[in-house]
Image 1 (cartoon, rainbow, N blue to C red):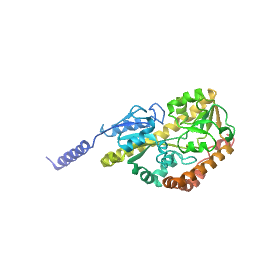
Image 2 (cartoon, rainbow, N blue to C red):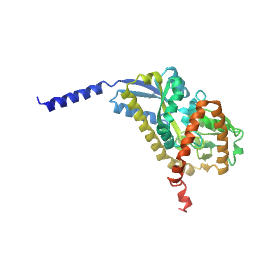
Image 3 (cartoon, rainbow, N blue to C red):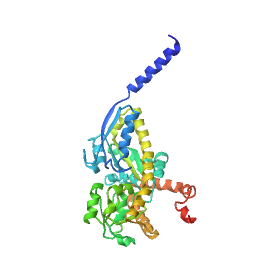
Image 4 (cartoon, rainbow, N blue to C red):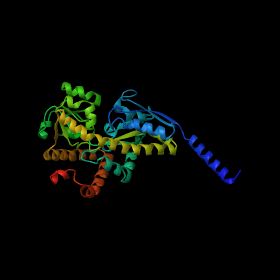
Length: 353
């Protein structure tokens, strides 16, 4: 038997041994959003499929619909307590317990999806994320980011910020606190309850997600006015929450496969989100929805209220302040590139096209 054959056979044997030695994990992964919701809820099932494929079935994450295992908004606490190995959610839901969580979920007037990923991976975001969540025995993995939310569906027209006063409105995260600055009565409800709340008048308005998701939930049937842009949530960032003890017990190879697949999920989700929104905005208008953009005066008022809320929360919670300062410093550094490196979004209008 020649040396080349022996060497080749030994290499193949070692490779086969390495593959067969890969650890096997079986996790049930409850989600905060239904898997039927485009880009918002179907990213984690895509991640699970990809992980099964690249691991040869050794990494098996079986997603569970909201409420099937635990309540939709209790994923963080159940992962923290070790009741489940992992879960998938929007991070802003945790901000009552972990104030800085809201800024990883979405920052009003803050980072869009690509900016957020740049900050997370190259400007200290990941380190701040781990410093924020590891004390709660949770290791979050960035695993999906999508385009801005709509700014709100309303039963009546909102000509000035004064029209917001007294309205019953659904909102989440820091945006909800900012809306309260305008005298709105803000509550948080799961997406599946919003249609009925609007239809019956329990709510006067709501924000929830992308235009495609809002369409799936039927808001255009029970609210005549849609407002843009989504200043309160310029990106929606979702995370795979893993119990920290479980994460630390994984092999390096398994952790790398999960992290790499979740990074791919960020690209998948933002591409999917961006691909679909233009057509659905047009369809809303064709079906009679009054699509409006907030005036410069309204946007200025929202910005001023945002500064008030951010200063208040930064003073109340050190980590919130550190994360917000880090994000804003990066966006300030990025501004020359964003303002000069890209065509203005309204360039066609500016040149009369």
